[in-house]
Length: 70
Image (cartoon, rainbow, N blue to C red; front, side, top):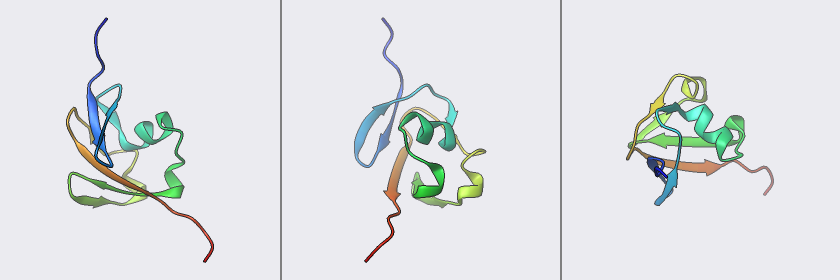
C-alpha cells in the first residue's frame, strides 16, 4: 500500500491527494473555504485564489477558522 504525500497544516503532517488546489484540500478536511483564512508557504492567499493555488508535497499551510461573535 502506498502512503499518500502530505502537506504540513497548522504544524501537523496531513495526508492529501496531491497535487490539488487549496479549495480541494479544504473540502477534503471538511472545511468551508469561505470560513477560513489560509497562509500557503508564508504567503496569505485570497479566497478567490483557493481554486487556482496548487499544493505540492511538503507545502506548509496555516489555516485559521473564522468565527462570529464576541
